[in-house]
Amino acid sequence: PAPALVQGPPGLDRQVAQHQGGGSLERERMEIMEKANKLANINPNDPKALEAIGSKVQCRVQFRIGYQTQVGEDLFIVGSHKKMGEWNQHHALPMQWSDGGNWFTDLELPAGGVVFYKYVVKQSNGAYRWQEGANNLLVLPDEWDIPKDSMFVVDDNFSGLSRSSQNMLASKVISYEKEIVQLRLETVKAKEMTKASLKELLLTREELEDANSKLDHYERNVATVIASMQHQQDEANGARYGENAR
Image (cartoon, rainbow, N blue to C red; front, side, top):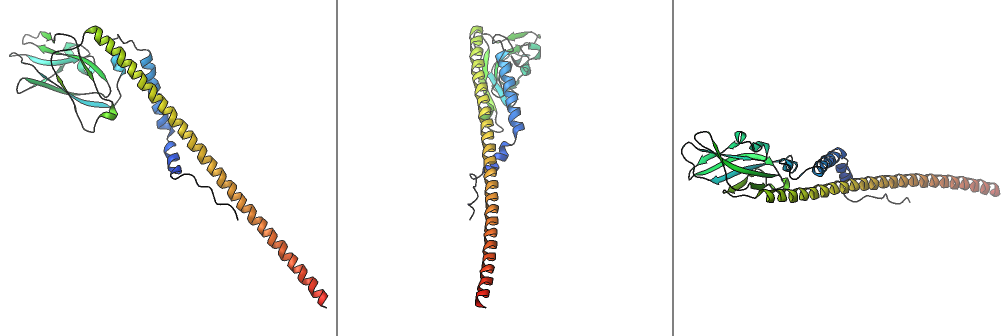
């Protein structure tokens, strides 16, 4: 009898089907390569250098700070991100006052992003008074670390980093981001290798099934020929026996 057909591992067809989505894998590769090229050419001392960090997924952020304003004063937040005015006090984000002299504002920023910022007091005469000291720093969690429908809360005071520390930190953060991008690229390569291996395994299984089918067909043909020859031999023997009997 023909040998049993060789079966692939459980779920093979489903795994191959899932990996057939080469379009999404290719898009992921292109996005990573684009980000890698951008990071490779960035200058950490550029005021907009940190815009290269972060994903397209947005993280809801609430800034909170306690500050006792005078009559006619309002509090704003200004920073390196365009949603925070890109350090232009006239485009700063207004904050809302609440009981106890607490101010807050909500906005969305890129997950995994890094932002420098300061608080600015707009006085009753229209003049601006900036927060003293160095800039505040916000490092947001990566998109896979953000729970659904959550908000990242930042409780602040009037302190910050020196300019030299800011540049040093930006260099370290960008270097770290480059490592992450490289790891993601290696992950995509591993996915592509897995996809190729699954395709090869599926092709091998199909070839084995085809070979088994052909072998089964061949053995049936051989059995038919043997049965036919045996039948012819039996008829010949029967005819010979009849002649001898006469």
